[in-house]
Structures are given as C-alpha cells and as structure tokens.
Length: 428
Image (cartoon, rainbow, N blue to C red):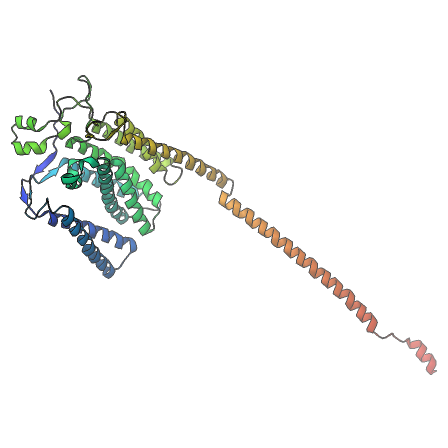
C-alpha cells in the first residue's frame, strides 16, 4: 500500500525544561506590545503617551495572564516542566506562510486602491486579524468539540499545533478584530474588508496544505481505484522506516492513520480556495457596492465547504474527526454553510438592486436622496414665494390706501384760490 509522505514536524529540537508561565508571559508581552503600537499608530499618539500606553498594557495584560495561568494551568504545567520534542510543526509553519504571503499580496494590492492604502495600515491591521482569527477559530472549534476539552484535558484547548481551528470562527474573529481597528483609525470598514477578503482564500490554500501535512481535517475512506487517494502513516509505519519510537509518536498522523485509502479532503479544499482567489481578483472590477467582495467570498466558500464536507471524516459515535455529525446526515459546518451562504446571496441580490437603482437615478441627474431634497427645497421655495406674494399684496393695498387718504387730506386742507381778476376789478 502506497503512503503519503506526511511530515507533521519540520524540525525537532529535542526536550527542554522550561517554565511554561515564562513562555506564556513572553508571548503575551509581544502581543500586547504589538497591540499597543497599533493603537498608538491609529490614534497618532506622540512618543510619551505611546510609551505610557505600552507600559500600562504590559502591566495589566501580564497580570491577567499570570493569575489566569496560575489558576487554571499551574497544577499541570509546573515550573520545572519538561517540554518533550520542542519542534517546528508543519501546520503552524504553513499558517505563518499563509499570513506572510497574504500580507505581501495585500500591500501590493493596497497601492492600487484609490486612494492607496498605506503600508503601515495593512501591517497594523494584520496584527489584529492574526490574533482575532486564531482566537475565533480556536474558540468555535473548542465549543463544537467541548466534550474533548473537559477536566484534565482542559489545557489542551491551547494546543493549536494539534489542529482544531474552525474557518468560520476564524473569519468571525478576523472581522471583529478588523472592525475594532478600522473604528479606532476611522477608516472605511467595508472598503478595507473588500480588500482584505481577497487574501483570505490565498491564505486558506496554504492553511489546508498545513492540514494535509498535519493529518487533520482528513477525508473518508475511498475506493481503491479512486484517482486521488492517500494513506497517512502512523507511529508503527515510521518505526518500520527506522525512526526511534519517541520521534515516531511525534510524527504519527493520529486518527487519519487508519489502514485504508482516504480522500485528501484537505487538498480538495485547498484547490477550491485557490479557484475562489483567482475568481475574486477578476470579480473585483465588477463589484457594485461596498461589501460586495466579502459577500461573494462568503457565498463561494459556503458552496465549496458544503461540497467538501461530503468527503471529510466525522465519526457520529465518538464525535472525533473534522466535525460533529448531526442527524447522521449533515455536519455543523454544512449547517453553517447553508445559513451563511443563503444570507450572503440574499444580501448580494438586495444590495445590488439598490445600487443599480441608485446608479440609474444618478444617471438621470439626481440620486434618490438628492431627489427628495430637491422636492423639499422646491416646496419650501413655493411656500416662501407664496408668503412673499401675500406680503407684497398687503403692502400694495396699504400703499394704495395711504395715497388715497393723503390726496383727500390735501384736497380738504388746501384753501381755495381767489381769482386775481375779480380782486382787481374791486380795487378799481
């Protein structure tokens, strides 16, 4: 039986004795400093306030991390804890590649915007998106697989290297983080979203390759004559190749390593994501309204994920696998795809119709808002004109009345003129 050469680990550094709390505090400090720098840049703070903000976030944030770790994880991860096989994992490495490639592509595309999107804006925004997407993706996955993260297994919810990131949760987390950043910097949220969303399927392409290497998100059993099929090796397979038992356990493909051919569901989705990426690039020039690119991506990915779910493994008895199966016929991801895809399609049609109607009215010389304003202004002018006419009529009436009375007064007060000829005759 042929096997896929799947390397879950790129480089193994061996076992190290480290204080887990120290590692968590270092990572938290780097993230807090990045957030503080992004916020200071968005608010255009000077050096002094920016430094004070960074120190405040470090102190408060690390204090929260310290007490949370001490309360929930210290019992298992003590100060002299030994980390076995500290390594660079394929899954995490491919996620890093996805974000790096996506950021570089966004910087190039941002320069083509009108007006151009600054490089600092994209870099700061990516910090928020990376954090938000990872938190959202892991949170949704843990919620849907809560039965596997209870009791002594609760600390495993932080082990993202073993897989378990929901793409729907990642998109929601990234959207919330992006909204927070654009609101702080007073940017056009939907314009930025239409730009950023084009890089998402590109990142998904690399991310699904990482899933393939990691052995997670694996597919159902397929026929022996299926043209594209893989078998993922387990620890025993690696030991047969001469690997020591401890390292072989590290390279084990887990639940994917059953002894039968599988559909490469991860590669199906990777190829589909790449197709969506190129489609969105071409569709960019045809978008009608702000947010059109985002809704188109949601619609296309919902269709893709709904189809791919027919090939992804999910055990209805144990709940293990890529997703929980409902009613033995449909998965949670498919339900989410139906809802999100339907909503995206309705919104696209409605907003497109509104945008086209507004454009038609604009071509006629006025938009609906301008038409309403013009009608109101015209009615106001008519009212003012009528009032002016009434005032003029009243003034005219008053003036006419005044002239008649004045003439009457003058006629009554003026003394009668005496004929000069009669006076002369009398004197004679």
